[in-house]
Amino acid sequence: MRILPDLPDLRILPTEALHPHELAEDSRAGPLAEALRREGLLRNPPIVLRLAGDPERYLVLDGANRTTAFRQLGLPHVLAQVVHPGDNQVSVETWNHVVLDLGEPDLLRALASVEGIALEDSDAESARRDLTQGAALATLSLRGGRVASLLGPFPDLRRRIAGLNRLVHAYQQRARFERTNARSLEEVEAAFPTAAGLVVFRSLDVEEIVDGVSAGVLLPAGLTRFVVSPRALRVNYPLAGLASGEDREAKQRALEAWLRERVAGRKVRYYAEATYLFDE
Image (cartoon, rainbow, N blue to C red; front, side):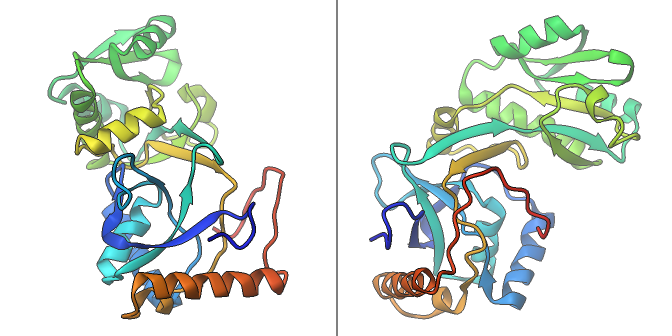
């Protein structure tokens, strides 16, 4: 039950009922688990969507690393924000990757070695067409306006996602990357002057991601960003309330009482405008 009709739908869910749509990043999940243990608070709940046909199965839209951290901590339940496509504004954006700490020749060799993917020189217009039509998994933007396409065949969603995982793994194991919505290396050269290149991916939609999870395949980490409105942030819910041996219903009642107290104490604030946070 929601305390106010326009508040985000916050619920206590079994940790095992949450199914990420992307692979977790080990380099982030471990430190996150340690931070959760140290602070004893869940700041930002994962965002989940109930999967059709199974009332106890939820797709994690945002929070794969947090979900992995909960499992590492052995928490039986988690506080999550459940979104409802009819009530919430839910959309997905696809991140592109600025590849760092790797030289351009090494990046090209790594991508050329990916099984089932052909790296071919192209031009901006042809590469954009290959990406839009699905002939390419991604395109590569290099210095001097040079462009390449990463071509396949990818006859179905399962093989396409498998190709994406091989592609990202090829540079992820050798370098690091930063997420960006830029589509050419020229746009980010000032911020990343030593970047080896920019990998630009085709946009995904929510249905494709749900179908992928239903088929048992996960996307690479750092590829998707779900935009959900409204979104619950800075909740700071005590982990002790999730770790106890009480059943789920008792924990849900405790959550609702806690939320009523926060609302009554005027601790909940709504921002309608786009907001930047400087303490992440």
